[in-house]
Length: 292
Image (cartoon, rainbow, N blue to C red; front, side):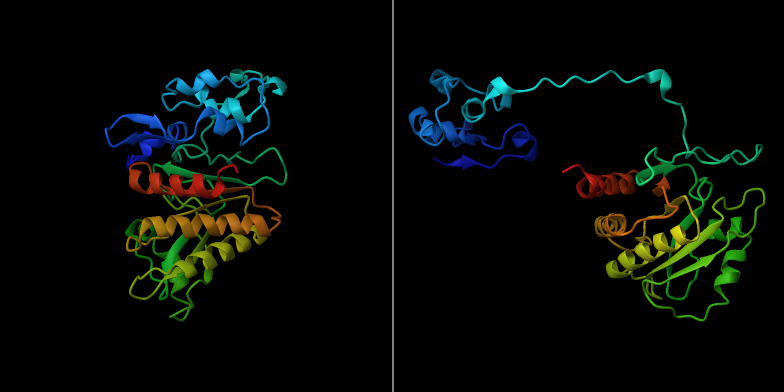
């Protein structure tokens, strides 16, 4: 029997419910194994109905003859879950744009459990107005800020601090500066961690991403940061899929091997309209941080 290739969407419900050469969808197992042969592969199951073998399951597990053949559902325990208390959930968004007409409000996004670190991908209005303690900024070996907005908001004071360091610096290293001062329209995070992930010619290196992410988070935790935000480290020149995987995998390894003292919230941020970056990072996030 020949089987036609399926799309991922077609195989999503059951990968064994395939198309034959006549484009008819059938169960691959039931087409090649008889009920008697199937029963010889498992211990006797009194609940199994051989007549179900002739019924088209339509690719749904609820109709699957193999499921009822292999599993005893008589001992299944009913799981009862209470409905969410919607009134108890605060309508709170820690990523709302900073209102310069009001005093800065402290972000209250810390998890309830002391040993739990909150990691999230977030689209924001402006990456320099997020209310966090520190910002991890991807930089290059000559420590030259390429974002005019960051220079403008800091009155070039951040660049002035970096100019005191003799370039070129090592890939994967991290340098701390201030935010240029607390003034109207300035950079909200007090600490800026410059992660050196690109060469002088702006070529990004995956190994440098991993090293600098771990170093930045370690230093931020030592510096007393409770919340930290980091920008995507592609620098506009590197493959976003590789960037997202390296960056998120580094965060995962850091959390897996490091017991933090202060750090509770790690956010990867980009602008709300950057849908491509958000989608790619969320996809990699689900793969790396997804429940096993």
